[in-house]
Length: 197
Image (cartoon, rainbow, N blue to C red; front, side):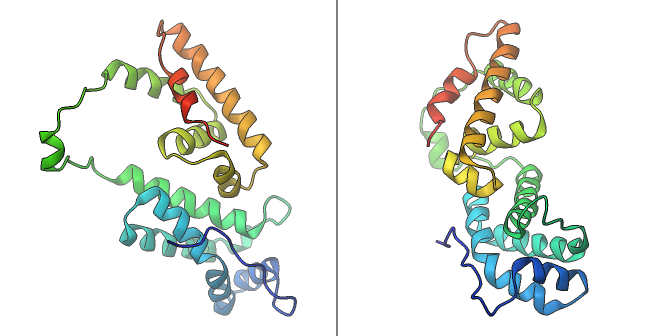
């Protein structure tokens, strides 16, 4: 399992921001150094989302190539280099998830009797998620569909943990409002059990 942290560079090494400037100027050594510093973090996040090592490797390489192509757009006033790279990788991981075909059940799973989910619940929940703004929807998808804890979400997004919690609470309230109008007594209330600190 890859580590979830990135080591800060020693004092004699260039800062992440200096590496981004060099990368924007076309210096491949800067890309290699950023890869050395942050690839393990991105692999760990990717494996948590995708579970398939080959897919993770492709997505992480794509993320670094996107960072290379768009290095000149990096704005240190808006995010750290780490947060920027995580954001690029996260979008690539989500794209991979959306592009995947539905995975058929293994034979053993077909043999196991399970209670089928009410499709109405799924439709209503999906409709409720769609009313959220992009930052709220991202957090809800990661927390309740991918199983990330609040502290993991803070690391992943670069947001303070208090902001993560307040955005999730606001998102749930919004979803409750939508589901209430739909006449459902179920929905995001079941999601609250998934909240973890």
